[in-house]
Amino acid sequence: MKKISICVSFLFLNIFHVSCSLVLQNIDLVDQVCKKTPYYDLCNSTLQSNPQAKNTDTKGIALIMVKDIVSNVNDTLNFTEGLIKNTSDVGLEKKLDFCAETYIPLVKSVLPQAVDAVNQSRFKYANYSIFYAGKEIGYCNNKFSGSTTSPLSDRNVTIQKLFDIASAILNLLLNG
Image (cartoon, rainbow, N blue to C red; front, side, top):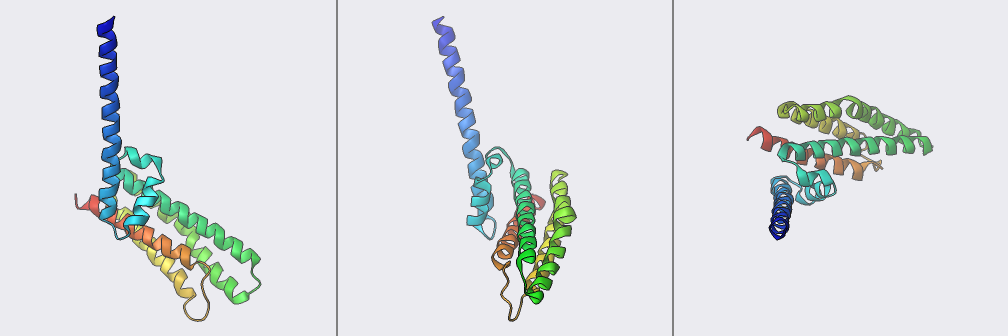
């Protein structure tokens, strides 16, 4: 009976050690990947806030980042629609309408296609989709150049940074 107890304890400790090692390796992987992106802190905080990042590989990290972008753009679309409903400034409303119309295809088509492309290991296509979405967000930003301050500026800057991070991760996957 004592041998069984010792064997079970030894087995449990080995499983615990392997489990802890895998978690530490994935935390290291997140750190290593984020160090290769232009915005380490944003990359690291985004991935560390997602429990799936602790149990994945670089492809999974890319997938988490692209899904986070979808969520951020969707939240920005909802925020924009709320601003449209509450503004009485016709000029601002037109600019916000333009941005909302820009975000809709990104949320409904372009970015979900990027998610699918990562799932299918089509990293070049995913990167192209991210690049395209970044250009579209840029068009929204340009509507506010000049005298009007954009109420979307902070959100769009964060989204652009997330695009840059995702692109860097996808390039890691493309370059092996």
